[in-house]
Image (tube, rainbow, N blue to C red; front, side):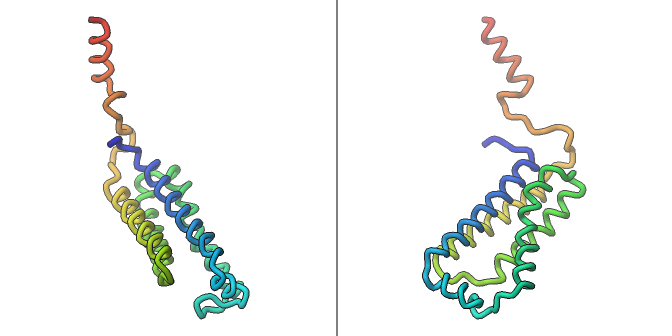
Length: 151
């Protein structure tokens, strides 16, 4: 399998999590019970207030920001920020228990992606100046390919 630059992989994984969160939320709108709860101003027994909506905005901003920060931050700053963001996002995802099978399905996928984010940040190489190369783009491979073409 091709190795990606850790920044690109982290950004893609954060985007993957966001798309799963968004789809799961949109997917709920086909359920009449979901819409009825929203119309009453209570969701799973919790009153929906402006403060709660603001808190939700801050919490969802963490993975949104990490899509960009993963690409821009250096390893020295990016690793601890990634660990913190993954912990906050995990806490956010686990703060409400799944109510049905598709919620559980998406939660499992999101948790696996968060584990992949933590692993990628943990194994992020210290030397950032040399990006990993695939075999086809390595100088030795190009030289061998050129030699065989000249034969």
